[in-house]
Length: 226
Image (cartoon, rainbow, N blue to C red):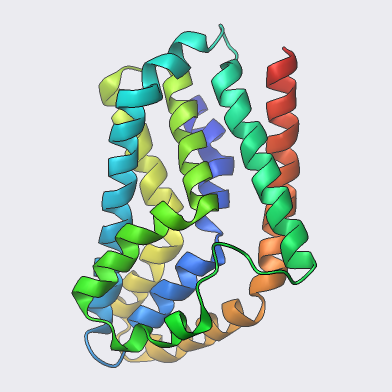
């Protein structure tokens, strides 16, 4: 299990560092009405979707990934996913560097309207984002493939995937905890963090996408050549 968690770290970090999901969470938490409830609903929505993705993957591709994995290897399915992930991230880095629009970015009006959403709508945002954000999809699929490749058994695999979800959403859970522990002081802190992320969203996405894109591309090519 420990070695599997270590192998999941790149996917955990890559998924956790997608700025858009953090910005949305911070904006919801700063909402003057029911901000905390909206933030919690948003994270619950993301968790539900990721659990659903895990179930679907296990039913559709889980056995195929495990069967094609060689002894100590990642197998062609896992290698292909890594290759695709690397390409997607490198394309994202290039587009952001060229100041082209990212398909995962919502329209500006969508972000400005977050203050007016209800907790139920925030739940819907959480449910929908992992389904439409390509980078989140590929990180999750790659993590699921890595878990299937490890062939740990159903219970251990479920625990490993749940740990992936929790750690991948750590940067969403921390602001919620901050809001709970420091309800007054956290407002200014969250506002500053949201402003910083919005301001530096482009260089963050470029750097994260470039580093992880090259890492996954190399790993995918190496796996297919093995």
